[in-house]
Length: 332
Ligand SMILES: [Cu+2]
Image (cartoon, rainbow, N blue to C red):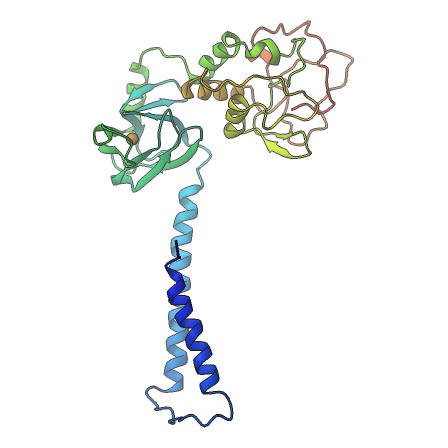
């Protein structure tokens, strides 16, 4: 297929060549003196004014766009899983909803989106908020509602037969009402606890628990830290990295380890991966492994290590008499 730009480019280049030859210096072409339509000052002023106008609009649009992508640190985190044809949301405090999302007014809310099947798009017109939910990927967006009320939530990516019915509501409440609503929710497990259970139920702990005999990276304290990979690359242990490591473990193998982990693609749902991620995140970005007295802290030279925290969240691992971790000096 010929690109549509080709005729235009050919015309421009052709005219440049024709004029360059026809009006070259010394040729006898007919040259009328230029009519003075506007003054030179007017032309300079006009050019400068439009440049400044353009720069202003660019700055204005860019700063709005950058703001839309920088999520405030204290935002309430809500996981959103889209599927044909519903929206499932779960706040990190455990409140689960379908096709509804309760949020407090005047508080930043961060959405972490994914899809269980095809591409969907989370769209709240009243908030000017739109972000695609993609299978096998996480996307993020955030908003801060400024008025209480109920606002329509739509899917705005054609996703199959009932696409038009993939509707929901965002309910913005006063903070006190929100707190009351939250405490009235069924005693649901929060994500991190679900993840902790999955971690042992699905066999992750069999290899990744600090006491395991299998040579697999210990995951305590991994969150947010740089992970050295085979081949000298460095990854950051964020949600996307953990997700990839679960679904495609052979792709980014941690330096010093063999690629023995099987893929969990098809075995874990998106919700379960989110729960595992929340659990690993809850383990913090500091070593959770209890140090055996007399042995040096293997991670003490890792930049960004935060102070030691409770090892209580490592499943199936006794705190007191755990063997000293084996492996490379800097563990992921
Ligand atoms: Cu959809």
